[in-house]
Length: 563
Image (cartoon, rainbow, N blue to C red; front, side, top):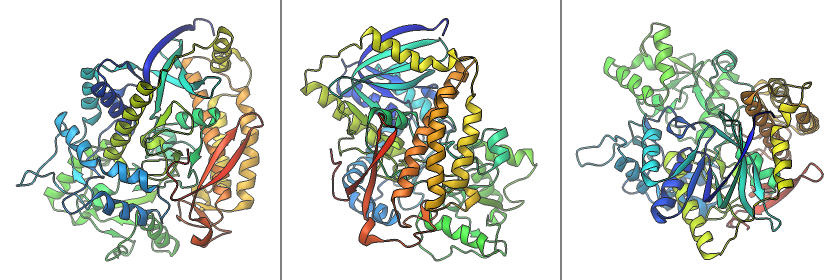
């Protein structure tokens, strides 16, 4: 702990996470209340952080002429077999187009048709040259007067005696500073959770650090909420992406952007003429493999030279490593088809349902704490524009909250601060124990083998899940033996602790839902049938810190937040 200083900061709204949702929240708050103090706490740098760090080539949530918030809700209900928070989807969809217009106003290039409309890519998508979305949003936030605390890892919410969140503790990784950040409201926009399971492409994942979702998204915001007693929802609704093998490049860029067929090893288009949901397309690919008709491919050999060039340019906007892969192999997209594979499972509220349980104002079950984007649950298919809208709603709700209530922040006492600092820096004190990599390897082994990893074909069963529960409880105790030699090691130690906490909650959810609703996201080998008569409910949980256990809850579909 030698050399670590302590610094107090005070703000009106603290936003934890500088991704798309966080920046949209920050800009909205400053524009709505120019005198307000808005602080973004970001573990990296908002100019190139989060899942949009490299950009994107399509905005996948947009209402074209003829589409409405109601038709989008119908689409989402079908995609997720009826388990959807209607109030969240409707309020989100109502703001899609405005969010896209804001990006365009900030300078993000959108190709347009002859009538000046955004260029369509599918039913709910528009084409974008989005490599600079994050830099342009960061510039807009700076112009609005948002303050930033970068290279700073949030580790714990500050909760007063009345149960209200009044800020957070954080670690300045570069300047060895322990921050006490007091805030009248806190918005969690830390994104989803990667790194729970072993990488689906072991060489790429372990050696080159490649994953579909950012590997530095360790679920810190969700873990902080769990430890503070916040209610979470739908952690059993994992997300498994269908991606290009070895690079984990997005397949939609090829299948939807260039309209390339998806074929089995015999060249048969096994998706042709079938109107499938996202999870059903993944399941169909796994079925082809299981029937001996794999590997499966995106047949890029049919592209014209111009289309091949278009594909390369599209990947440069979102996943440049795909273009680098072609260059490394001295190939073009036309030389051979792209083999596809499923990723490892993730928890991502923007694609699936997992995250904080919130009301339509994006308020969590903890007073003073809001959640938006990939960290909030119940409203899938957010993508870029939906995450922006949720950030905007959370910001306006937080402003209304702190304006209507005369909130006087109470600075934690010296004893409380020193205890929190001691917890945060504990790994630096230990000379003997475990390093983060050891616990992470054990976490991967537990989840891969007993909680529906790729080695188990993503299938779940009670016997294995009960073993996972037992082993994760042991692993939570082992966290108290973590050691760290420097600030970077300390950051890794906190990340693995957070992953273990979120994984523990996820296993409880996977055990609780005794049906198969979203195969292979959630596929119970011991309960292989979807059961609408019993399981048309949200599965929620709270963590009981006093006895290290989880309280499981059911929430009806029509309940708007249950707060």
